[in-house]
Amino acid sequence: MAANNNPNTSLATSASLHPNQSSVATALGLDMAKLSSVAAVVDAIESTLGKVAEEESARWFAISVLRHLRKAKWSTPRDSDLDDAGQKDLAKGCLAVDGFSASLRTVIKDSRSKFRIVGFASSKKIERGVLATGTKAYKIAVNTIVAAGLAARKTKPASYKTTTKKKVDPQPQLKPELKDKLKEVEKTVVGRRAKRRGYSIGESMPVGDTLKVTSEENQTVSMSKEEFAGLDAALSKNDAEIIQQNWDYQQNEDRWSRLLGLLAGVGFFVFVALLLL
Image 1 (cartoon, rainbow, N blue to C red):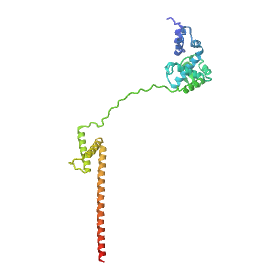
Image 2: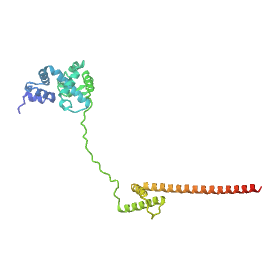
Image 3: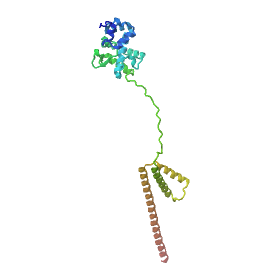
């Protein structure tokens, strides 16, 4: 089988040439057949870009720093949320800081680190596309990104779905046997209320009192068994207290009556005695 002597195919499949670098060269219309190494490709890119080569290198580097800060996984600058204008502004902001250009040239002096997305770690590993975080260029890029408010991860706005609330039936459906028991309880409560208001069981109640009893009746329907038992106990206790108060009041009246009668009798005898003297 004959060996493949096409330099373009050999370079494109090289592990050292990054897909980003290949895309940039292709977009610039470079003849890849004449480029035999990564360094040759990078040199051709810089020659074609001319004066904007430094800005383009800064753009790739700054987008890589932004990717690292956001812990993102994008593989090209266009995958970020910054458009071309925003990316160029970020690169220009970094280049405007003293010391960035000189540091950047040192950081990406290896052709394998130019015009591509790189990673960052505490120590550089050029063969793996990883640069160090302790460089001046990295720190300036971080400060520029933070100052521009770009460090925070951008999230998609949450979609607000209209939820339809289910109507709650205020009067749950009861079983027939429970309904019968509930009616008996209602009759007992209504009779007790009527009796406390001074009406006999067979006597008709005024409309106002009927409405009050009906209202109380409705409240009773919505109570649980435990609540009803507690209410019944409280009402029974209240009735007992009222009866006791009435009984104490009646006893006090009897005592005062006897005392006043005794005083009247004593006074009468004293009066008669004075007349006889």
